[in-house]
Image (spheres, rainbow over the protein chains, first blue to last red):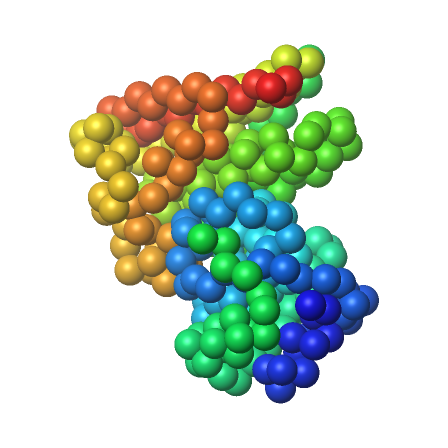
Length: 114
Length: 139
């Protein structure tokens, strides 16, 4: 699935990295715990999280994650957007809960990592 | 043979990960296999976050040669009284502010072990902790 379709399905807003809208995404992982994110070995992963701070971006950088969706109306700060841009990431803000967001994306064919 | 050093401030979460980020850029330039880069930087990042979360300050020393990368993190801080206990998944002494950053679930040290080929931890209570990691580049 293209990120563009993900954004449409979630009625979400892209706040950084529009250039990645046509990139493909296959796997998704949902967590607020960055230590859990750092244990995932799957490539081409999209992160769903309610944790919006600089460490979300740093964790994604180390884990080679370039696609992040912030759920529960969490907003990316300017500092986060700057760091994400340096690492060529797309940041998406979504008003839905983690459960609803996960449900929509799972039903649409995105795969879990385990 | 390349050598790098970074200073880490305890408690400063806005800078946590800066050293790991620098190392990632260097390893990319050296054309190291992306899977190995990920192992190294995930291990270093967890260890760097540990200094920020628990210590007053610390220094990171990195040595890269054609076969391996050695990382030594030396901090001044409370130290670890029982290293075996600290290595157990789920054991943590992290503060609520560390947990707010998405860490402190007692997974850092096990994750460092999982992402390095050799790991050695020595510590003295009220003095500090030294973590040494080795990762081989050709595997």
